[in-house]
Image (cartoon, rainbow, N blue to C red; front, side, top):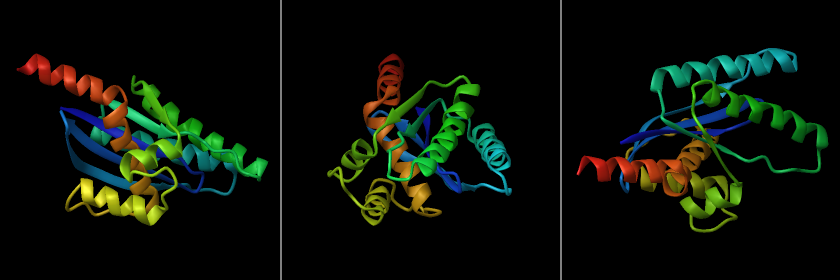
Length: 168
């Protein structure tokens, strides 16, 4: 079994979701949202770093995945999102993990079946794949979807298969 954390970066709200992967089976462990605190950018980034570090220490994932940033019309907004994404990649890297990166369309296609699904469809399909899960909000649902995507396409699927084969 391998524990995977998915992170949906955002400057105000960074979603996170942790799943366990055992072969083709996935199960929910935890999910939540890190809400940045502070008035200036540096303080908000530090807040996100501290909260994600606590999540990593609590759940000790063996694999991590982060959604890639899309570029929108607001250059300043995109830059700030990129800085939050840097924190989302830094924290797992500090724990010694290789961080998988997935385009939003790949995550949606993996979880929903189409690359242009809305947040409601993502949350619905996450609930279908993780029965009984209580999702803390749309950002946490997206983070769980990122973790599921990594379980199917990333190092998590390769490592889980290798562990299962070695255990047999």
